[in-house]
Length: 237
Figure (tube, rainbow, N blue to C red):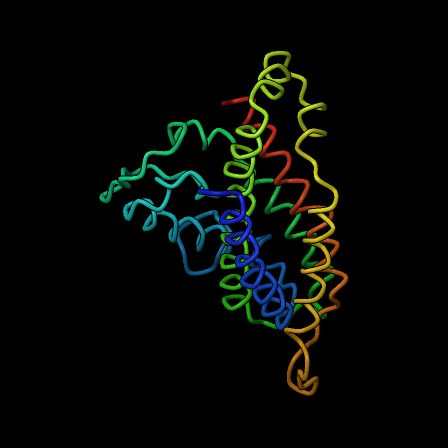
């Protein structure tokens, strides 16, 4: 896969993430779904983590986590019924040691404090469903970028990267990976999409999201976490 193809996939993923954040903003923060054990279940898990765990328990059987960029948020114990025939550069187990899901979830839930206009509206199930949707796409986007973009950059300058990897010089690896002009291109594109997707929205029935919130989330969370994953991938490689 060429770098422009990888970039196209990441750009397409933006649409899903931005629309997902706009949809999540239609509901309250609804902390009860994340702070207390879920009612109606024999579990100490919150409603959010119960939903995520049950969904991933199904996904693992269908082989979802056989793909490197699909990293589970919860512990999955069963073996897949479907084996992925694609063989990545590293064993999938080694990719999954590069797990950024905790940081992704923490940053996302911090964003919700600003994204949601009301604290509680009673729509716990809808809030959780929207969160699971966005988080899974965020995770795939960040891990996909971390693994495949890093590999392509390594292929362009293998000797330089190899020298830094051998010295475990993570700071210099990050500097070499960083391309400010590409990052600003992503930021501009996210801003344009966040605005265009909400053009003509009926504010009597829908809540509009400040595009700046989404832009800053990309600038201070999505892009840095992707680079962190790139560095970890190259060190593990």
